[in-house]
Image 1 (tube, helix red, strand yellow):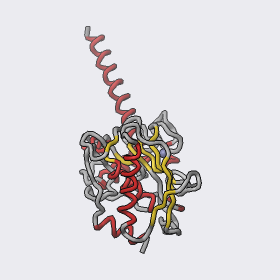
Image 2 (image 1 turned 120 degrees about the vertical axis):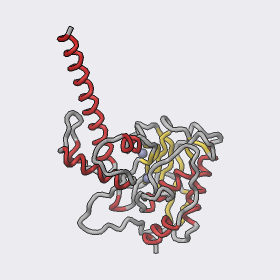
Image 3 (image 1 turned 90 degrees about the vertical axis):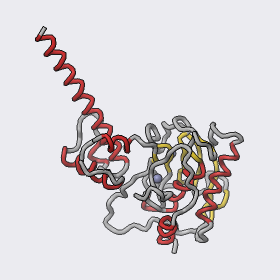
Image 4 (image 1 turned 30 degrees about the vertical axis):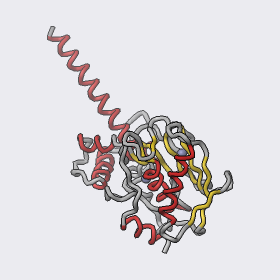
Length: 263
Ligand SMILES: [Zn+2]
Ligand SMILES: [Zn+2]
């Protein structure tokens, strides 16, 4: 009896340590995708590829960004924050030898719509919500957005399967876009993506049980203009999203960030 009890205890311990290793592996990939760990170090999906210290430092940086206690551990608050629906774009830009200017040279950007959301009918309503987000940035008087015809445009807007080609939205990410010029995260080429996850997320227009298209588009267009994530939960550039949350007004902080790029 004792032997078999000891054996099952040992099995449980093995299972727990396997679960811990798996959780840590997932956290590593998550942190690498957001810029908290440098990608070349985490190519392996089999083994723990960064040192305990490096991993812990990355967790601390994540905790600092989100105003959590700096434990360096995957505690419950940290895991809860990691599990929130969010924008897939980075929180931390890559280090660069020279300061990068993340802004477009031209001030008139052409866009086109591709696949609409299956959640919104008529689909034109979703496109109109994205257009309203363009209007909010355009109202600052420095850039304009013009409807063009793909592929000769600067921005392509589409709803897509989470498992898409340019950037995986599988998991907590509900949308992504990209940054201009040499600040790009996804592609140096045009058109820039503005992609919404249509397979794992529900989309709506002012719908309390769905992600608000205009609010998320306002955020993603911010990246396309060159803005990075903000630590201020009221900023449109804060990375987390909630169903039913409407955030279609720019904060003074958002406007100042934009005007630094487009004076
Ligand atoms: Zn974002
Ligand atoms: Zn994409």
